Amino acid sequence: MKVHIEIDCTPEEARTFMGLPDVGKANEVYVDLMAKAMKGVGSIDKLQEYANQVAPMGQVGLKFFQNFMENAGKGARGSEDPKDS
Image (cartoon, rainbow, N blue to C red; front, side, top):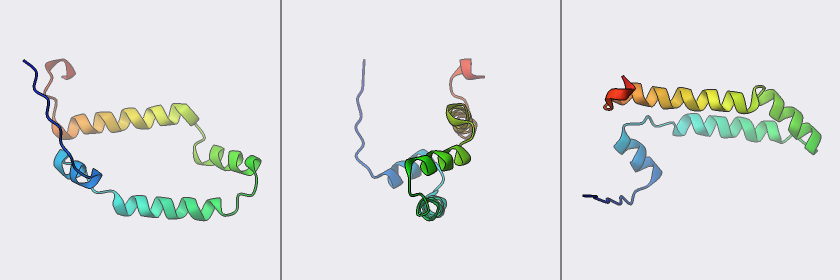
């Protein structure tokens, strides 16, 4: 038997429902810093140089961060699947 449940909610409501922290203020600070930093970028070359400074490990760093967040989520809610133990 399959049961399909559709929940209509805002991203904020979804984060609260799933027990995730509110990162709104941290996001505002990050976006503000990025906007200030991007004001000095006048060409594609400067943009590429800046991107390399911000994310020196590129895809590897992104994958590492993604794995970190997935594992942190599993640890926060506890493993319900015996194979995750």
